[in-house]
Length: 333
Image (cartoon, rainbow, N blue to C red):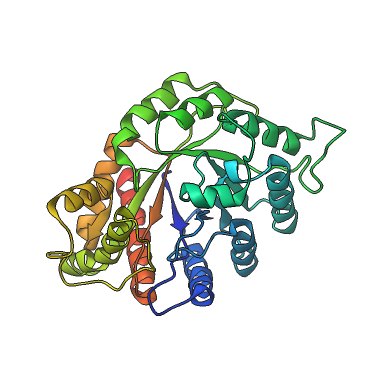
């Protein structure tokens, strides 16, 4: 059965703060658990005024402690920013605290601008892309293969690894290592089909995974009407617009229309970025998700919604869950 899950950036909205963002994340996670969402992932970003989840493992522990059943994890940890041993210890600790509920998605990008990446100090004096070697090293810490250096806790614990990507690089690596692959189609849709084709074609079974497992990302801006869904989505559009212009800000409130806010090239760029966003009424959202499912045949869809009003964000995910139940009922019939 197709799974549906939440990707949360813990948005800090204009007029709000990180405390409010974390409170809202916990509330959304509790609701998502009741609505049948499979997992709840948080993403690592740095120096982003509108995203509160920079200390991702800390927020994961906070959310896991406030829920009971839903899987909680990283979507993802940006491995270039961290020593693999530290990541193994952090997620080993989380798995020891919340057994059987912790996921570890890994990304290759720094999750920030280059100035901030240098401030993170992971690769001072280093050159080259060490991501494949770092993933292998991290996996060995969880396996406890090296008696000289052990992740405690971590060694011997079952913390599932997922590779995240927005191009074919991580697709190839996930196939080679026999790991699940999550594609960031919620913001980089152009390489989706090519990357999934490569991953499925080249996949090699591993100890942890016998067959390819695909997660695709999709925006979710659902409301009772198409007009209201489109209005809610303007917050995300304005946030991306600020990012494109090199001036990232907190999540802005929605506007009635984007007319006058963006230039034609900016609109084209943001429309392309949101190609797989499901925006509108339940019926419109269902049609959009059905198209995505037909085009990609995923095992799971990860839904992200940067919505300013928390009650509206809850309602969007409630509608999303109802749509997936309807899709499951249709498939069963």
